[in-house]
Amino acid sequence: MVPTEAFVILSMVLFAMGTLGVLLRRNAIIVFMSVELMLNSANLALVAFSRQWQNADGQLFTFFVMTVAAAEVAVGLAIMVAIFRTKQSINIDELHLMEG
Amino acid sequence: MTVPSWTDLNLGATLPAVMLAIGTTLLLLVDVFLPKERRNLTAWLAMGGLVVSFVLTLATFNQQTTALMDMFIGDTFSSFMNMIVLVAAALTILISIDYMNRTGSARGEFWSLLLLSTAGVMFMSSANDLVVIFVALELLSIPLYVMAAFRSNNAKSEESGMKYFVLGAFASAFFVYGAALVFGATGTTNLTEIFAAVSSISAEGGASLAYLLVGAGLIVVALGFKVAVVPFHMWTPDVYEGAPTPVTAFMSVGAKIGGFAALLRVLVSALPTLTAGQAPDPVWMNTVMIISGLTMIVGNFVAVSQTNLKRMLAYSSIAHAGYILMAVAAAADPAQADAAAKAALVYLLSYTFTNLGAFAVVAAVEKNDGTGTDITDLTGLARSRPILAAMMAVFMLSLTGIPLTAGFTGKWFIFQSSIDAGLFPLAIVGVLTSVVSAYYYVRIIVTMYLLDGAGDPAQGATRAVNLALYISLAGTLVLGLFPILATNLTQAVTLVASVAP
Image 1 (cartoon, rainbow over the protein chains, first blue to last red):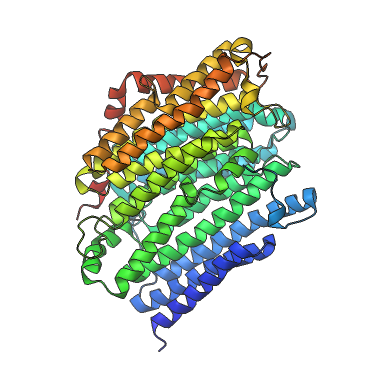
Image 2 (image 1 turned 135 degrees about the vertical axis):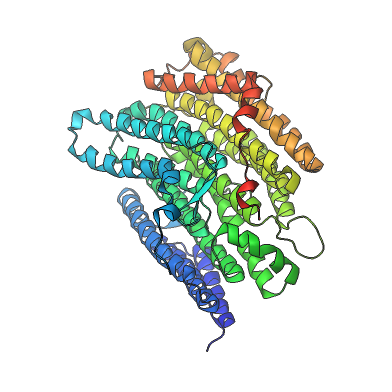
């Protein structure tokens, strides 16, 4: 059986990749994908811990995370479409009407 | 695996939040069938939903019970939080009705979104399980993303929604990962069971303690994003400036109530015994202290240089998050936990009235195209709208924390609890930064009263907005003049009793 630590380390790597993606990438869609990667890395950790503890709570949590992530993306894509209509661009760096 | 019985579910305790959520869903449906010219009715129906929920909260105020198989706590702490957020939502409706109509962004969904967000705060303040906190956090946040971007074809509002969304989703991911690690360390997501497991894990150390420490840290980061504390505050000024003013008003209060409720529950109820090494204090005490001090300093000092009212109030709300965080730090001392939680509640209550009042004034002077929110636009307001200016002056004094206003009562309790907990440096930082804050709050009063100018006609000060202003003013003054009310209101509130082993 693969030890839990292996899954946790993999999930940490994925989480770090997602975090870096949010911080470094400029395209809004890629940023969303990075957030999804972060959420799914948490899912992986939850399922791994769930197996370790023989406790289904973690798997249950995963389903909530997936549902909420879907709701979040629906809202995010709608906002992005609205922004694209106004600005013809979804580059995050071009969102700088307000500063100071 | 047994089938849960009605007693396990104990649905009666959840009624305030559940009824609001059900009512909101119905409201969404009702709105579709209303004729276009009677759409204001939706707002008043939403108000009705809030009143029903408020009455149910009062009816269940003194309960001390768990529901939904221990995932949900109904106690005085959550009832008090519910009452604050319901009042905040009601005031927001009063501020919004005419504002949304005159800025051309009136749509029926707005009221449902506002109520959903309110329900999210209510679930969050009653959550006794990391899963519930997560879902409630999203129920609170997702409607706010939409509401921030609600003014269609307005680049600023859309930008505000986008920024709030990206950073909010980012913070949620931190929360989920933190919850996953806490689950990994303790094998449960229930706060009561986490509390039971923490002391032995702290004593043993090893990988479990590492998971628990990192997990708790990530959860604090995520909730810190939501309540806007330094260094997770970068989004706040932009989002607050771009969002429609009533939305900003609700965001500044609602998100804080939910965030601090969850923060107090997680840190004080579940992790008070999370220690590392020999130190007797929980490890999060120093972290929260440092964040609190930084938040007060950065928030107040940056607010001084702002020229836009909404931006200034954004930094002021960051600073106030720092003051409330002071109570969270004080709650690390087990002897002070209850008193500190009460102080946080009183502060949130007084901040709600004061801040919503201030934002109502901003909404009143704002032009239909979203301009007119610069501090200079208030020049001469005392001549054109003397009552409005006087109320704004009271709100500014209350935000500073001048005696006889609610802000003073709130700060009094906060400083007292932090001194009782031995956090003298933090209390000193708090007092000094309050002095700094006087500079930019009083500048508003000077602009209104002493500078020459024609004065803004404040066309947005309609009857509904005025009503919201009077209620906020009454709340601000009553809490300031009769601090005894605050102590009486929170007397029954206990936070730690719910998890006594």
